[in-house]
Image (cartoon, rainbow, N blue to C red; front, side, top):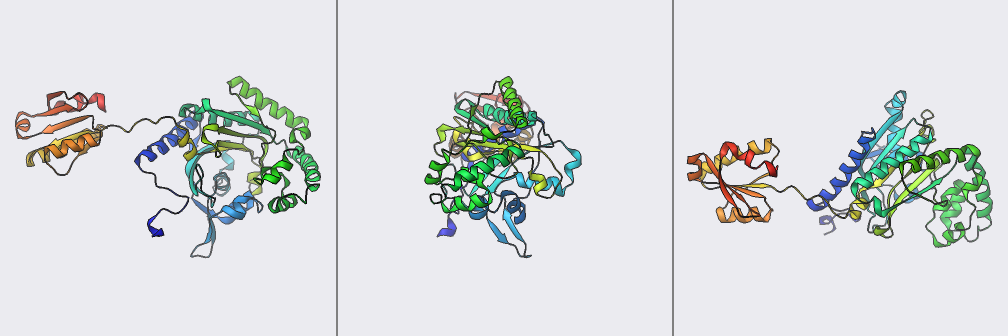
Length: 414
């Protein structure tokens, strides 16, 4: 029976869900377009090395969550767990670095083998942006502003909090890494197994640990802000000033980190408390070292990703589906004429429902079931006069309308 159910951690998007989903994606797309971002799409699977090289052997995504398999050609491929690495790969493989700066928007499914719960799926969807080739702090400001504008248009920004931090430049991170390792080494006997492994390979990832014991240790760890270079402090000051100028409120969270080595300077998350435990609806940061780590040229970058399902859960309301116009033909001649009328109205962007069988009572019952706004009733008498009976189903008002004037009469319901 398991084959007759969706795989655990996946779900069907039926029409009502799909309408919410599409509303989120279209809102993000329009907001990104206003900032000049062009849409791209990368394959949903890549050579596994694309993600192992960028996400690192110590990340939970690589060690526990990736859907990796060997295809029939013997190649090891992985369903994408995130899209930034794929965009960076495209920059390199498509020779796009000569066109920098580049501004990309994307939307699509991602895959992670996680424990399913509300707001967390194994096949989930994200929208996101990547700004490549801009090293100035203004790029960070614009990336954040694009995300805020998306959430504002979605109607959820007033219930969200932007958390902001800086990871500093390379020199800042190296100095901080040294003191963090010294601090964590004094708790080696209390750290989790995963954190002990991360301590050797990438100690900043210990700060992301979900283990309660680790979190108590991390709570008293040194803060990265205490080890920033003057250049890094100045960079972050410009970012904050830009957000202030735009009137974008934020909270400093000095525990907010990105453990991956290629992240630097600004990192941020936007949370919505209404969603409970899985409350992050958008997150991102600057990743100046990513493209070079993958073998490409030194290319600064900054971007964010947002979970479509979580944003859909946060929606208070969604625009309703357009209400159709039902055509109710009675008799063979009316059936033939109805086909032509339906085609003409659809070409003019009306939503038209034309049933396939049933008497007038059954067809009118269907019209009510699908919440049609109006019904065009056609019979032999109406055809002889070159007219149709147009019934407005909310008010019950009915009038005769010439067939060549139907579109004009229905214009308010297009």
